[in-house]
Length: 107
Image 1 (spheres, rainbow, N blue to C red):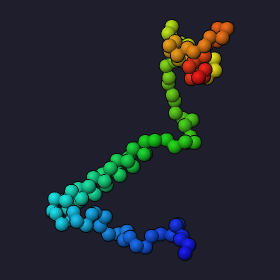
Image 2: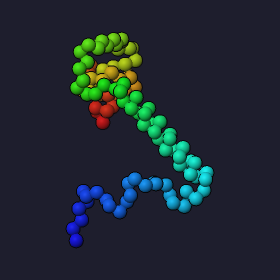
Image 3: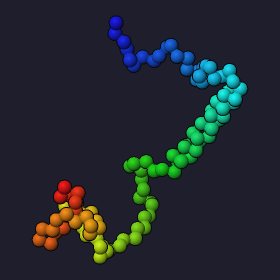
Image 4: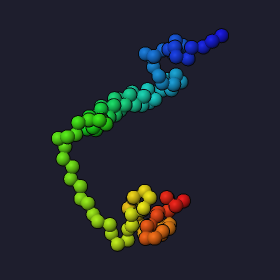
């Protein structure tokens, strides 16, 4: 018999209680389940508020101004000749004619 895995399940009641049946016999467990449901609602509202503060990829940011402080390479840093990342001098793996390579690019 072929099974359609995309079909919705009909054996589980989606609107019913999702708690473990044996635990609902105890008042403390019932109270904890109700508190969990209330706190889940609060978390969902907080997530929605946080999501509003993020800009989606491809959003029009032409009116935004970005200020970044750019520092020159420090005495204990070098720029890898392969990946062009600024690294600490302890990351030098190879020096070929004055061109320095980091351990990631040489490895």
